[in-house]
Length: 492
Image (cartoon, rainbow, N blue to C red; front, side, top):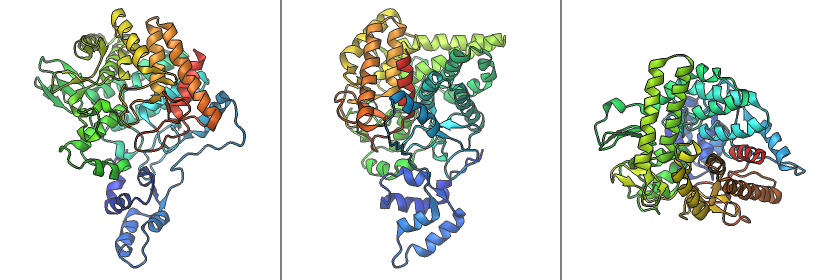
């Protein structure tokens, strides 16, 4: 796979375009496809840019293709919501059999989220698969898994999304859960054998650097506590402004520390870009400290990956590997209780690696140990109580208890956590609460669809008459994971 970051080849032009704000959305320029050789575009720009009457936007539009930069769905008549989603699966299907601009090639068709997101996204794809399962689209589920495997085999991990500027970070590792979902669909255990090597390679990515660690130190995505226990954190290899939010990052970086950009990018690897969860003062993005935090969601997902590797090893009679991964999973399970269970609040929280204690942020990622069956009955009951008391509103589950203006904070309800919340409560017998989560959010989705004819990226859980906001861009319609989770919840 050609990993050349083509944005670097047009760096001067790219910098000028982003700083000039010629597009309302800075993602536009990162998704642009040059229609002439880049060397010719650069030469023409150097020659013309100082001339009288030069118009930067006209130059860019003449030299780059912006087709497909944004997906808009328009229908003359409003279909019932489930029929609308069935049509959306086809309208959101893409192929990329060759690289174009920043877009990475992939071997199989895939579903994109929608709106400004016209590429393959990692954790989105798991929640999209939930709906594909309901729709009977098993082949597309298999395509998504095959694309993830291709990326892991060729890049070493699944990037945040299938563009060259995401080759420095991943997203929450859902590949092992994707295999579970396909197995639940076709009951073929061979799926674990087929992708055993891929599972191992993804695990190696997340654990890379473990052997170099001393106590109370971090390398890349791995950290060793002062007691010698190994945990994981989100991380990005680059420490520079994100191309897709270039000027926003530069402006936000004033009066910040030397790793501000890496902290920003590491939060993006979590999928939560952005939230008070990452802020030292709980309020301002300038205090972001993602690198100082080990996360309950990431470590729970890696426990699942270890369990899946033990399973895939057992299926092949690889006894030594089975024992190794079984021990790793058992050790991580214990550490999740040690480091992420906060006795004071009786809830799961992230762990601050420098302060050696839980972070104060109350957030919905506390659901992961219940979603994956890691919590004991008493822990689950306590978390369920907190969910009902602090997170569940008329329009669904919110992500945090703090209103900061960031999109992954109150009052927004995101599709992934409605499914995690429903399933987590079902796992421990809190059926009434599970139904309330399902009905509150699905009702919100249906109301917004009735009023707008659209399915949104996120929803306002407090004011169901209002479309959700916050963040670096307007609320998007489409929308992959909303479609998937809605169909899955309605089936249950």
